[in-house]
Length: 180
Picture 1 (cartoon, rainbow, N blue to C red):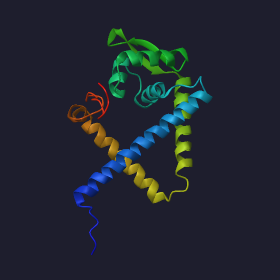
Picture 2: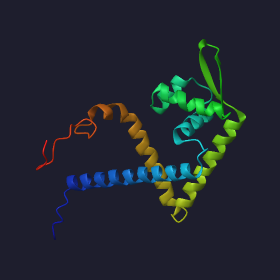
Picture 3: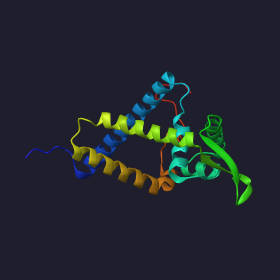
Picture 4: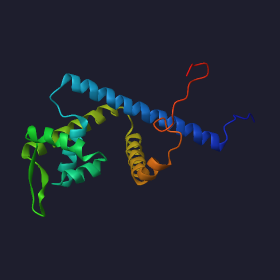
């Protein structure tokens, strides 16, 4: 029997590299699609504002600070996105009955309709992409993606602390032969 050189450890490493590369390609494809859509439809909501709209649709009224925590961004960023939603008549601000200094954000009827329309459009796009896939493959992808996202969310705080040799935290040193 011929040796392939693929020990279980090496196979796992190669699979993790392949998965990481596939996720990067997935993210790049989403980014390209979003950029092309924004160029064709400049008045459409950006993805970040859309995410807030969907969260309000799914979870009901909430404070901007709660939205910021839920989507993992800074309150000032959410504030700019909320302003975009309010200006378009998709969200209203009302006084929070439990704290008059704070505001509650709530979808308008127009905002709820927009969220439902956008969700339906997203489902149609996904259906087109996987139309040629057998149902068991579609089901398996959905289950595995759910599992991956659940595990990512569960480990997110420790991942942020545990990542070593990150390009974001590792100073660049000159390549061999470069003059510093």
